[in-house]
Length: 286
Image 1: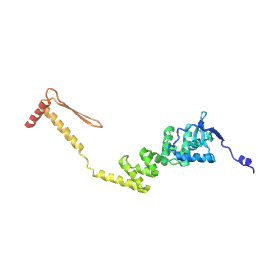
Image 2: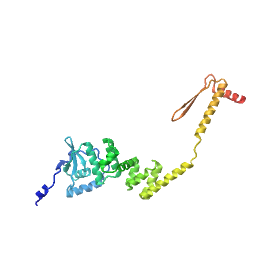
Image 3: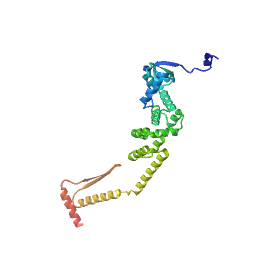
Image 4: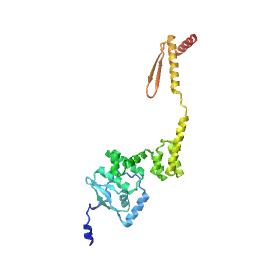
């Protein structure tokens, strides 16, 4: 059987298009945020020596080709001096193009888990997916999507340390059990500096939470309510004493969710010194 007959056995699902690299628009929904320049140079050298073995994927938005998958390959091809690049066209609107971009990156396993989480979040926010719908699109469980989104509660500084130190997503999820602040940051630094595995990191978090609970139990509650009532009684008694002494003093109490305001009004007909003298006399005769 010759080559022509062998090829005729298989269906053709499109064709390779040679498109100028400068004509291709980058996908604004690209989930990848970090691309190593050194890795790009290595890929560019490989392309220069061996050619581009895997075409990139594009779709047409209007008459303009937009990248769906293969941003690293496109950038490396430009560095290698390629003026045209082989492309496979897929039919997709902007929504589906964003989905395909995310799926392609996840399947190639060359995005970090924070980038994947950001991509999933954008997919949900921009296209109105529920977590379950996003999970179905990505071919994973809804719990996987939920766990991936949770790690975005970590700060940018915390994420950078986690990635730099090679900690896993499970390390990140263990940290989320601690409130953001010095305690979480301290736990992260201990995980990184001591090279704790996941089990050791989870035990560290457990110990910190136990210490927190013990400290909370031993903390004596301040008698604020009692003190405030005593203050109100003192003010009310003083107002009553001034009134019995002929001073038309008035008091108004206003209470909101945030504070209690007590306003005392004493007529200008008598000075504060006179009012105090009247109270003193009243106390002496009581």
